[in-house]
Image (cartoon, rainbow, N blue to C red; front, side, top):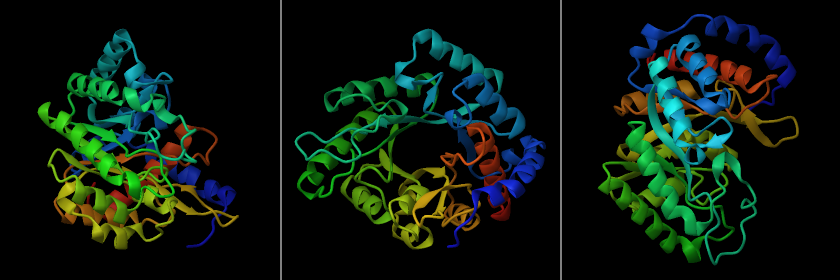
Length: 320
């Protein structure tokens, strides 16, 4: 994988993205076998503006909810949640899932994780508060009419083996709670958590066998953990019927040799091939843009560039 220059890339990609984004895809998005969406806060914390971009400019019908107005979904007031519902109706958007920070905390009794000081996207609760947090997201899922809650499996440990069985039991307990409420729990393979790569994802799915528990496949996160062949090699290890959600982003080797986030069409993941593989297994869930790359002047412009690359890949796979 070649190193790329941010300056050179932006010079060519900005104009291309702007031209592509100027043509809404209302009709085209409806033809996709997937629920094509965007995590709204990757565009802006202003939820109305983010939804306007997703619906009017990108021409999409789905949005993933993680935070808005600078707060995690679980920290919003009832009035703010009501406003969010009105905004969704205004733009005719539906919700793919609740991107909760559930279990993005340290495992009790284990050595302190080097990732445990991160407090991103509302992951500020303690281990003891996780059951209450899950209860909040069960309520939010019903309110926003989605059947999936995203989770993790605790900040990454150097050696999780002594705690792995207990962590799996906690996931089983949470999945059972979701199942009782007609919901599914989807674990994201997250580079800073104990399930980060495809082999680790396959392992946790084999340990937590309930149909109420599945995978939020994120090959970009696997690359960030060092699994440079997350697709197709890692993908081939996964039980395809257990993939319930998919995040779309990419990563590449930067000028200093370190892996860094990149636009969707520039990186280790061949998204045209990944989308084609999802289509071939009969996947009809969400493919949700999670930009993460912030190489453009603003998050919105970075997402616009990444959406142009994602759109191209979807079209190349015959999925848009």
